[in-house]
Image (cartoon, helix red, strand yellow):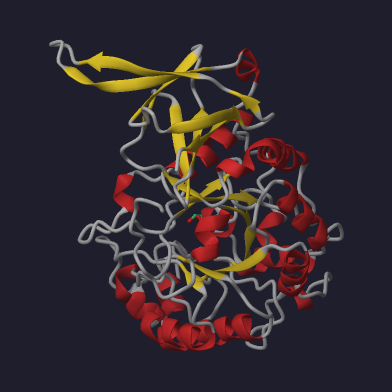
Length: 440
Ligand code: GLC
């Protein structure tokens, strides 16, 4: 069994830690300007100017089934899609606002299309819901709001009632949890502390956190409807998963500081530098970076969710398709080293540049050759423990030599290691994997 004690949480994360790999989808009005999902506040765009994106929102090439098939082919087992991002536009037919996809030329409930399509392909469905809402008349003008620099910002902020907004949050979350079947993950985004230099008039010093969202009440309502749902901690109350972004989480995230228990976490990453479709963004990760991220995340005991920002026409652009194909090719050969795998037993060691994952029952070990330009790889803690080894992609046998002593600089015996000879073909592969069958 895994040598880690995983911290118990309210939701059911058993499938989550098995499936390991998901797709994030950021889609909304911001897909039209195609310059990042925070475009409204980055460019201080007025409501009137931003309304033209609502007027022309018509993703004629949107085929949620195609999205789902591409996610599945890439080896992704679950997805999370924005139902509402910070701009406040709802991709679902909410009874609490007119600012929704069913009132645009597109005219349809995109959340409905998404959950049906992804479930049909056998994927779990998650929903991203922004706690922030730059369109809602009761959301305060705070330090992230597009109107924060308007001359009449203080005037605009008067009368905005955070309690009414918190009620709107609960109403919409209830709709999402009751009108679309079983939702497996609800992903809130995000809380932020007070600004030391917030102007006098800014409510709560510009802070938004569990008091402003009324997170206790919100989570109690959620748990009454969907007790097993997986929640993140961005409503400022720890729940089931922590979600480091654009990072392969360091140890600080892995363990509960008091108990040392292993946390359940998901690294959220983008193919390029933006979550929403960003036409001119050029920082697209290389194929090797994409696979390295997945391997290093699972070897650290986490999940990886990779984001696609569909274009405003509703399709994935060719760069996203190419990135998904990289995962599809690698996972076809190597998914057995990812699904149902966790951090390896800390008693096992491997050469620099290589990573280990281990099966939940402890019987199989996977050596991920991420940066191994040599003809062999060293393993410690495994002397006499290996029954058989093979290159995972083609099932060809890999041999090893046992019991090679190693010493410290003063000549003191430190232990023995074994070396595995690497077949030449691994040097033409991205992150090849050796599968090890341990003796019973
Ligand atoms: C970052 C981005 C936000 C995105 C989120 C996804 O916080 O600012 O736009 O939705 O990551 O986790």
